[in-house]
Length: 126
Image (cartoon, rainbow, N blue to C red; front, side, top):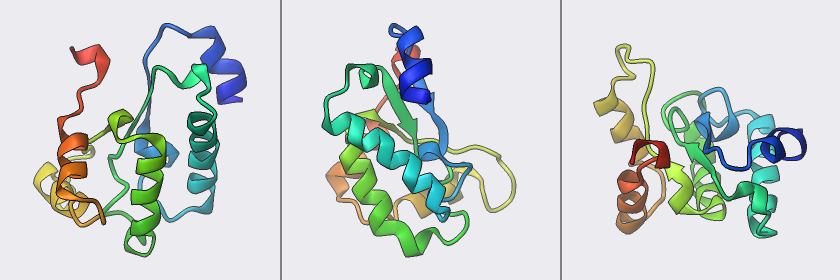
């Protein structure tokens, strides 16, 4: 529905999908299923994905994310690191930006990959 109905009516609008399409964490099978739809669209070079970005807020640090760390890193690469935005939200104890960054940096990504993601700026902030 998202690709077929929402994006076609907003072709010139930047869309940011929170939490890599989940509700925070990455331990729900449905989250990876949703990301898989977007990965397939990116691989097909679907023009509807041109202005779609994903934030990585909450994917590391909530739930059983460590068990899926390799999958999270793989999915970020498949989506394209240039469309991944680093972020943190819900500033509560244990989830403060400094805590979240430390957990995020435990993902199996290279130093260059972290640098790319952490340097990305959403187009609407430029």
